[in-house]
Amino acid sequence: ATFAAARRQQLSAAFPDEVLVVTAGRLKVRSNDTHYNFRANSAYAWLTGHLNEGGVLVMAPSGKRGHKATLFVRPRNGRSTIDFFRDRDYGELWVGPRPGVAETSSRLGITCESLATLPKALEKIRLGGKPVRVTSGEDRDVDALLKGLTKAKTNEQFEVALSEFRLIKDEWEISELQRAVDATHVGFDDVIAEFGRATSERWLEGTFFRRARTDGNDIGYGSIVACGHHACTLHWTDNDGKVADGELALLDMGVEGHNLYTADVTRTVPISGTFSKAQRQVYEAVLDAQEAGIAACRPGETFLAPHHAAMQVLVNYLVKWGLLSGHADELMRSELYRRYTLHGTSHMLGIDVHDCAKARNEFYREGQLQAGMVLTVEPGLYFQTDDQTVPKALRGIGVRIEDDVLITSRGPRVLSAAIPKTVTDVQQWVQQSRMTRHGSASPSISNNSGKAKQKR
Image 1 (cartoon, rainbow, N blue to C red):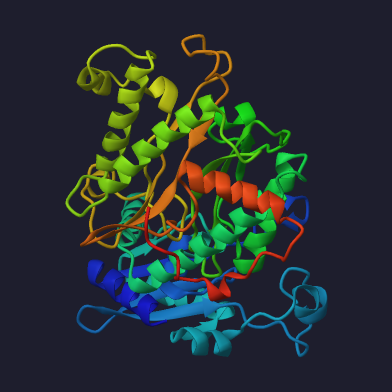
Image 2 (image 1 turned 45 degrees about the horizontal axis):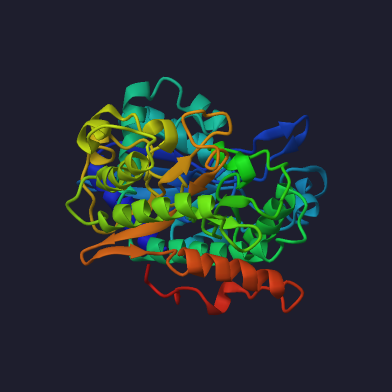
């Protein structure tokens, strides 16, 4: 609550004498009359800590330059209401109890009112004549109530600002990200323990999902479980391939914590427990590139510095292997290496897996790294099965290694450093997991959170 209040003050200072409306969002139809599990709009959750459907934050100008914040939330549909029995979306008989107006106000330290009073409050705003900004497109009812009061351009500017405010994480956010990473580590342990038993990538996907729902809210994004040549498809989410000894498994997965902050970690591991010569050749090149990228994660460096550092290493390897020819500097300018590397090296991480996505280029992609930013570092090499520019021994091998990195005044702090990454550690990890699969169950993260050794 304390951190959310400070964020609202930051927002208030940026938009004095304007009405600010931020919505949680509504249930989304999956099929016919069934809905997806609800997940609150990230900006709304960041400003309030409230995660339930239908909520609306209204910040109305108050005093010389400040705002009064009111959170409109759905009241309880308990036994004293007819909707307890008849409302299949919100009645407590159907979906169980949810915090009501008083409970939410007490938990979050913010004035709350019933969502039923929102139309009257917005009509008062309409009559007040103050400029209004809203996170549009999340709640059709709020959009309708504010029709004619807002402009698309000013709403877009509002959402850009909400993205840019989230570039620097506060200490509570960093602790939530560490908890998500720690849960993800346990999830990786769970998955690797299933090698030798799993016949399908979906078995491994489901294993990680179980951990995400046990130690967090959900998965932070669709898990990529890509065995063999599937690893050469960047967003392989079908996860319907075989799990076979002799192949690599590229595992790109992250737990979304109970407060919606998500990890995003990738490990590429040998299913049998031992890298082949060709697999190790590619893996060590990517690992060297990733280490160079992490080393560039320092305040004052450009956001693209980790990418350039990682790509420089990979270009040198590609030249050494004869896949590219020419001077390394010219190859960097021409970007011919992208045939094999395919994607960028970093993105911001936080309450969204691709956090702060609406921030302006000058503050993000073309900006400088600052203490408190958290980003991924994830270079890769992908050699397609039918790419005749690649030696046969390398075709079908895809390797990506990804860690979550906090920028500090002392340099990079790797939040996911405890998850094995060197060739020796990865092989030992898989071999031990396969041998002890029928032993004790994977531990809860409750005793691990925040205690990961910070080393690479």
